[in-house]
Image (cartoon, rainbow, N blue to C red):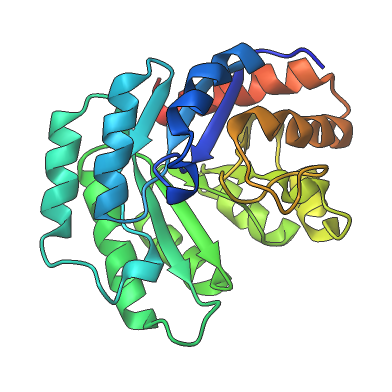
Length: 256
């Protein structure tokens, strides 16, 4: 399938999974129809690595943020690092990924909430959208989003159609990954059905969440076409038409 105008709205190319062939992949992605990529950061190392990558490739943009899994170890000056990155790199277009993750018992929820709220406040003060990670933390995530009302996207959406409606009421976008191609994706597909076309974005979350037929392998942005094909099927659209719509939504989301 020959496609173009792909916007992968959430990728992790600073991840060590790409250390062996990162630039080989990034140089070839435009040949596969990928026109834009947004890099998501998880920690200080990511922030620096992603910023450097965005400087090397015209089609790649970046974000800065601390993921909830680092709430216990984040440095006291982490906001200064984010602030300086925002100041230095004009291609930085979002704060993320940030949020809550209650999947593992060992995480300190109070610290996660503090970290999440601080970064949302920073994003609002700097007129930047947020990239929100929420895993097994739906109620607290929604309460915080309703409290601070940031612009942005809830990425790799795993909630119900009802939760999607609550997020949409806040004016946010919702991102879907290759999960919608999985056989057990009934919940995700119900949520996708509930999201209007003007609030929908696509992502890989690479190197994770590879769509079928690549499930279990390292993902990259070229694979998003399989996610787009499934989404187009659900929405009753041509694949290219869906890619055009989601690309425009991504541009609007990130002011590109």
